[in-house]
Amino acid sequence: MDDAAALVRARGLTKTYDGPPPYTAVAGINFEVRRGEAFGFLGPNGAGKSTTMRMIGCVSPRSGGELEILGRDAATARKAIKARIGSVPQDDTLDTELTVEENILIYGRYFGLPRALIRERTDRLLEFARLTDKRASRVQELSGGMRRRLTIARSLVNEPDLVLLDEPTTAFRALTDAGAILLVLVTFGAVTPGDAPRALAGAVLTALAFAAPLSAYAVTAERPAQLTAVFRFVIMPLYMFSGTFFPTGQLPGWLQKVVWFSPLWHGTELCRGTGRAAIHLTVLLALTAAGYLAARRAYTRRLTA
Image (cartoon, rainbow, N blue to C red; front, side, top):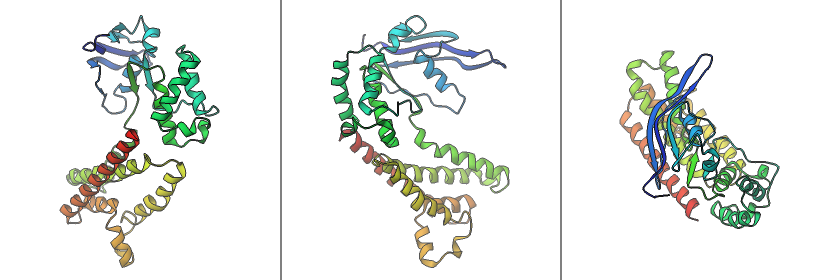
């Protein structure tokens, strides 16, 4: 296939459902994805992102428009297209009763690959995913991070021309949660509409200040128990002593100094408009930047190690 040609080309792509009630999930979109590009669909829940991904993956037929995948019509060459696509679904579809190596072997057999070739590729894929020492382990024994890496490695066994990743930014749903919490606060009068812009900034920055360092730690954690300990002994105390449930002035003096380093306390004070907004914003931005740098370094080490 010509490198300059589009891997995916959609013109007026439409998906409708009969219902009841009938509705249109994808309404005549146009886009192209070329070799070497990382292309993403952004939008709120129900915008049609996953529906479009299913049409690209030849799992769901289109209702109208044109859709070419790897230079072929998605409606008439589904089998040939699917043989050249790798898919990383949002949900865990690994067989927990089988070993790491067996999961890749069975997935490779779906594509009709010889066992010898699958074993050869398995060695490289497990090394890439840093799971070589887990090849004989059952999937049910792996941590969540290991399972995700195995799913990615499995999707590459057929050496695809196109890889589909569903919901790759799930870890940052804290931003959506922050917006939802703010909406509830405004609705019930805890935050006035006039204060909403400041509260929104506080909610988003607080979510980022938590999400960035947690992502850095999660990518290095090998066992679920490690993350459980962080939530139990770090995150929950931060919530309890953030001023959300009772004034921090009731805490001992030494604990008030510890609370000052909590992003949730700064976010709470910023949303309430109790003063010193510049200080709270500065601290939240500093914590977010530090977390981002730590997460970037952790991911780089994980991918290049």
